[in-house]
Every structure is written in structure tokens, then in C-alpha cells.
Image (cartoon, rainbow, N blue to C red; front, side, top):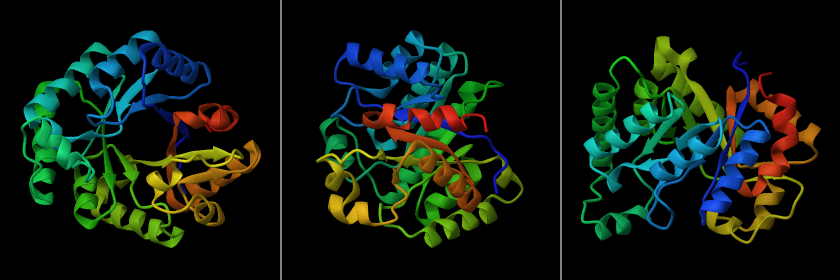
Amino acid sequence: MSDRRFRFGVVGSPTTGDDWIKTVRRAADLGYSTVLMPDGLQLPSPFPSLAMAAAVADIRVGTFVAAAPLRTPRAAAWEAHTLTVLTDGRFEFGIGTGRPAVEQQVEEIGLRFGSAKERRDQVRETLDHLVRLDGERRTPIMLAAGGPRALALAASRADIVSLAKDAMTPRAEITQLVRDLRELAGSRADEIELAMNLFAAGTRELPPWTKRAAGVEPEELEASDSLMMLRGTPQQMADELQRRRDEFGTTYISVNSTYLEDLAPVVEMLTGR
């Protein structure tokens, strides 16, 4: 069982400045710890979006996650360090090798997508640049971990590890993933905060984009014990998150902004516990 306390984040995808400001301020009012922003050319750029978020509310901000191939390592480190400085340490740098859809986007901006190894090397190089830029001030690093190579990288470099598996991954597989991570991390295992992202919470019907996000039909997902879902009353959801903390050690829970209000009672019940 983890002895870490719970904290919660909201993953947003702003379409207008007004909507983004409302989401950020509402998240802060409801007790969420962090506002998180995905990366991709279909969305506003995450770094200025997060700078704006940090300016309108007293809340932490983070990339979830920056796609390494969309920037050179030095440029990505520069952006991350800048946010750390301007937010006075309220920025968390999530970075990864990029989803398959990023390959076409990389071509649009004139860069190379590269092999899986080359993209992992980009992540490492970005983090090396960031360490040099940060100096004594250190930007917290979030890495997603699913496969063995990503797990090894996260074990050696991450402060926060987001457990990245598909929606239908059994609990036993997640348990083994955590064991492998802790073994790889060795003496620093207890320093790593484990994160889990939800795209649905509460009792509302699943949205139309569920199949695109999860890869399975909403009905199949609803009938499963998917860890990407958190269903039930606030008390049932709180009980389930405590069960997950006992099983996996996950204490940093993020949710799609669509469900910001649905998870709010749980945030109130569990934050800091």
C-alpha cells in the first residue's frame, strides 16, 4: 500500500480562451491539484495554454504529454524550463515518444518521426537539456510506462509515472507492471508517484468518442472492469480509488475535463488523504 496522499488533475483540450479560463478556474475552485494539456497539432499548443492557465488560477500545470518528435530536444527543454521559471515551480513536464497520429503531424512541420529507439533517445536528450537549463531548480518529470523499454526509462528518470495500458488491460497485468517498475527503479522506487488517467467518471452515459479513445465499443467497456473508468456514486468511486491505491499504489488521478464536475465530490473526499 502506498503511503502517498491523493491528488487530482484535469486533462483539458481548450477550443476558446474563455472556455479554457472557465475550466482552469473551476478546477482550482473544486480542489484539483493540476490542469493538464495534451499535445498535437489538432489542439492549441500546450505550452502557451498552460502559461495562461497558471496566470489565471493558483494551480499546478502540466503537459500530458508533450510529443518529443514535434520539437527538437533543445526546443522542448527550453519551453519546459520557461514554464518552470514563469510559474515559480508549478509546472510538471510530461513527455513521451508520441502516439501514431503524431507521425503525420511531424511531417507537416518538417521534422522526422524516427524509429521507436530514436524517439526514446529524443526524450532522454530533452531531459538532459532540461537538467542543464534548470540548474538547482528541478522540473518534475512525468513519463508514461507501458512497454519494457518505456518502463526502464521511466524507472530511471521520472518523478511521476503514468501507467499506460489500453482500456481492457486486466488488473493483474497492471499489478505486474508496477512490480516491474519498482524493481527497475531500485532505491528510488518510493520516490516515484504513480498516476492513472480516467476518461469517464460517475454515472453518466459514455460519450460518442469513447470507442475512438478506448478502442472498444462503449457497451463492452461499460461491462468490463476497465481501469480507465471510475463508475458509481461518489462514495463508491472513492472506495474504488482507495482500492486501487492499495493494489497498485496509484495516488495521482487525472480525468478528462468532460467529467470535471462528476469527479469533484471524490476530489473533496480524498484530496490529501
